[in-house]
Length: 168
Image (cartoon, rainbow, N blue to C red):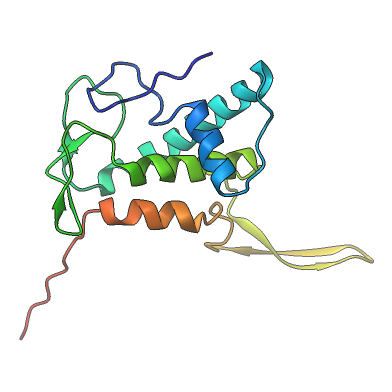
């Protein structure tokens, strides 16, 4: 399986911003261990990259700007996006977005579930003998791993919603 990579031109059917070589280079530069270069190892990386892209796709409604092309299948490229007072190209994938996908790919390879199915019950107290378990409800804990590097890279691309307050 080969990843169909979005390059900024609105590639139909794209499922990633990065390829296996990008993940390998990114991981190596940071001293991270990933599957060996082999057909099986490459497939694991490709699958993790797709899961990471699925996660990034869930953030689209929070992003600045709008999709550049009607045909594109990924949230980027985007028009009307400014980060740190710099207008981002409408026909390219920002490097920080590629890095964020790489971070999420590495988290997935490390066994984190970026979008877990939650039953809403977290163990609040557990007693081993004679077995007793108490579950907490309504907890925000367990809503997926915090991948701080990825979030730090993605955050500048989020639209800021200003709240208006009225004065009486």
